[in-house]
Image 1 (cartoon, one colour):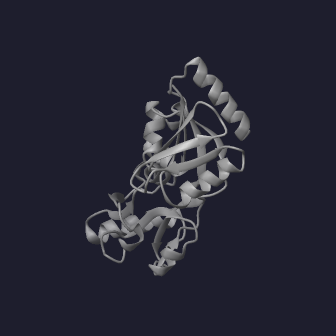
Image 2: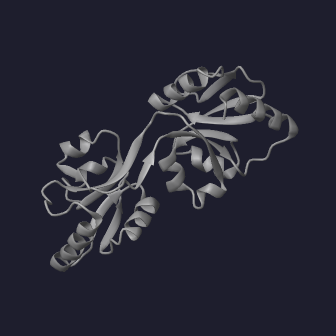
Amino acid sequence: MSVKLGVPSKGRLMEKTFDWFGARGVGLTRTGNDREYAGAVDGVEGVDLVLLSAGEIPRELAAGRIHLGVTGTDLIREKLVQWDQKVEPLAELGFGQADLIVAVPSCWVDVDTLDDLDAAAAAFRAQHGFRMRIATKYHRLVREYLRQGGVADYQLVDSQGATEGTVKNLTAEAVADITSTGDTLRANHLKVIDEEPVLRSQATLFRSRTAKLDEDERTALRTLMAKLDV
C-alpha cells in the first residue's frame, strides 16, 4: 500500500500545488491525457498522487480514502461537520487566497454592518411578506456567521452558478460568496458588508485523522512531511 496525496485535478490550483511541492524537492506530474486523472510522485518512495476536484478532497480526507489533500479552507469548513476532528491542517500554501463575504446592493446606502443588515431584513419581511434571500454555496458557514452577528429575518437560497448575478436576476436580495479582488461584486453593483469576513481562506495541505496507516505508510508519510517541513 502507499500514502495517497489528493491534489486538485486542473487549473491554477493544480499548477500552484505542483510548484509548491516541487520547490521542496517533491515532483508531482500529471500523466496520461486531459481526460485521465492520473499522476506520479517523484522524490519520495511510497506516495501516490490522486487527482480530484477541490470539492471532492474534503470528503475523501474525512472518509480516510486519502491520507493528505490540498484544498481550500472554505471547502473543508463548509463540507465537514466537526471538521477539526476529521482533518488536521499541516501548512498554508500561500496561494488561492480569498475571503468569504456578505455583500448587498450598492444602492443600500444605510446597510454597512450586520446590525444594519438585520434591520433591513426585518423591514424587507414587513414590506414583502417573506424573508430576505441571501444566495450562497456556503450554507453552514454563512448561517453560523449570521447567527453570531444577530441577523434573524433571512433565508439562504442555494446558488451553484454565478452567485453575484442573483441580485441582478431578482432571485436574491444579497449574496455570500468567495472573493479575492471584489471586481465581480462591483461589476454587479454589490458592496461588501463592512465587517470581518465570514472566513479567510487559502489553499492548505490537510492530513486525514481517519485514514489508516500500516508501518510502511507511516514511514513514507514521515519522510514526505520531513521533506515538506510540515
